[in-house]
Image 1: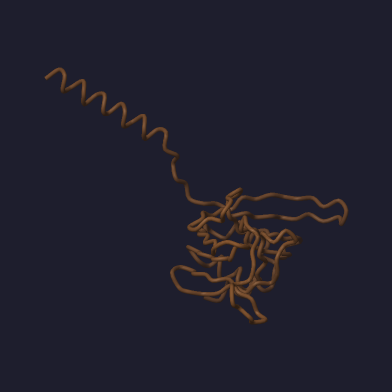
Image 2: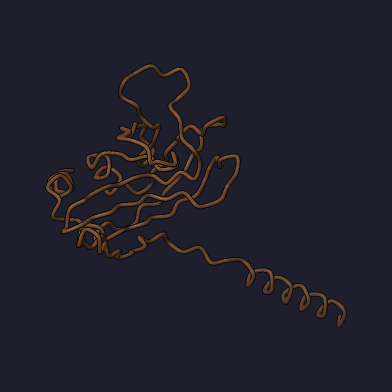
Length: 179
């Protein structure tokens, strides 16, 4: 009987130690960074929402993110930080380039406004930003140069911090009111 009690106690201690080592999952939140630009005399409000890779790039060096940059209450740029050099979908010959995506389980496409100079950030229009901010879960696919389609998932938290700093933008203001 004593041996059984010691075995159960040992198992409980081992289980509690294992559970203590596991990170606690927290709900994603917008990270806020205030950047001063002394050259142009402006202040930029940057919001970063980190996601997870469902299909990672060949070399994973950073976490995927949605980045929104505002100044004077208006959105200046918004983009997906993919973490890999992005190219057009193989075989596509259209002038308008898109990224495959899903918002709350519904298939969609995100218009691509451009790429960063290093090819790892994909800019998209403010209209798509409003659709993202209204959603709960966003999944985006972007094709990696000489690689597969990188698939990222973002759990979208409350958009009030973003709207508090970027809410003067007429497109955001208009489309956030429309359901």
